[in-house]
Length: 196
Image 1: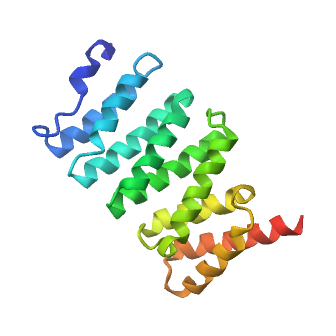
Image 2 (image 1 turned 90 degrees about the vertical axis):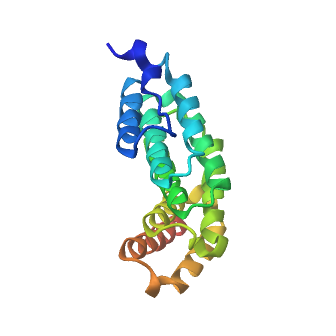
């Protein structure tokens, strides 16, 4: 019913108030189908340059919803989020991007179209983020997601996983409870992985 008017729901960052931007993002993702996904993703890509970091975080979540609704573009969304993660300076946006990347990697087990080589590249990049300054540039929920990703995809991290665990164990007392839980989870997965 509203698909012919899709472009009417594009956000006008200069004039739309924040509540309206968020509502338009929700509508855009709800109207996304195979015929409109490319247009919607191109529009979302322009929103990540906005100065309002809350809006950029909402846009990152919208990319995740689009990838969930249209699994054939999941790899493209994943690449876009990794590019954003590489160049973004905002801890909040980086954290949201990591959380959505985790969701995309989890969804890949349910039939999304992300090749194993692509998964391996993403996991290694995220492990590097965790190693860099011990991952302190991302908020605790995102740190927990980073650690979960490393534990879930140990086969891609290889011999770096024990070193990662050693570094994480050093900062264990200062970590948030959700991060501590993922560190313990990583230790258990690493033990089981090496026991095989």
